[in-house]
Length: 472
Image (cartoon, rainbow, N blue to C red; front, side):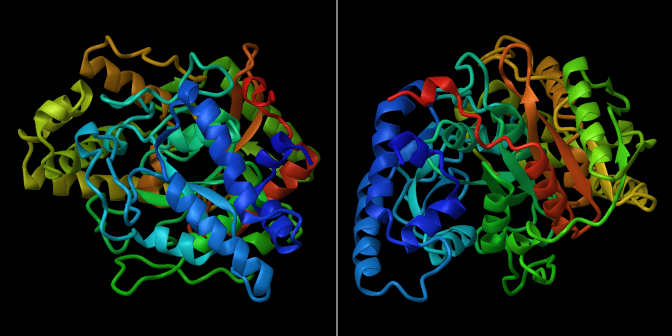
């Protein structure tokens, strides 16, 4: 296997190569560090590359493999990237704020602890949007993250760096997070698979309480359904004191990729009220996926999806209140975040609580719409990727309006806490990736994973690689 093929080999397969001693952890880590050094200056996917730590960890694991190859954790020696909203002990955690470049985290976040226990080697921290608030990753003080399929376009946000690094073969799998589409949007933009898990599936301990009322969650980005399912198994689990929790899946999420899919009732939506219909290219992607699902034997029918008009303001109120609560000095914030924080100062605790109650009321309506279906098929985003800096000269109000339209299919399921998986389905006429999302009933990740694995078998996509990053 040549170095490029190895760099684009899925993480589950890399784990097998290590266990069979066809490749060592050190060889893999050196491969990715070399690619990062050579290619990331064009991409801007990494905030920080932890080369010394990664080499030391990989050397220790390579020595361990030579002498004690039994009973290894599932991803022993496989490299991974960590989004720079999640602290890693001994590394800075910037949250997309350049003033924090030198503030070193004293302790691992809970998901990082689970990732280390699974045997992964951390390559570095990937660029988020500023405080994870925006669907493009261009925080002030950092080079913008760019889409490896076309460097003029965004890889999305807030997990834009994670998706860009993965799609370009600068890591085999990425940890990410989603508070309004921040896993699914970058998966859509970069031609990847991304899961937003159910509320309570992954603990936010020990650093993060429930400021967002269950809107946000960590989750996996990968090239294959098996990779994201396996990483979801690693990330999942209850930590004492969590406000929400779910029982562990039985069988595992990875095992669900091998479970035959029962015939499902799938609802079809191509419009989100009050936004309207998705752009033609995104609408067609949904219709093409509907045709594929019907060919696989599933029943696909258009359904009426609840009007989201009353969700927009409560969702924004919650997000801007949390931004204000962080107490970041205004001079370090971009103009959209600064404006949202300004708005929050004219709100009250009562406004916040009413927004939470309203969001929960609308969430019930959304979940009720699943009473007659098993899965919902709809666009991931309403239109294709925007260019890097496309909205930079707009006023904050106009930017927020554009964002609200673009990402409209994603936040409703952060409000409900339902699981959703983003799948790549093809390309725009300009050669940029296209995708759709599948949403399941609460806690039904296994159904989505089984269905996505069936789709992947019928229509494989992991063989697609961005040409600019597949040359020697």
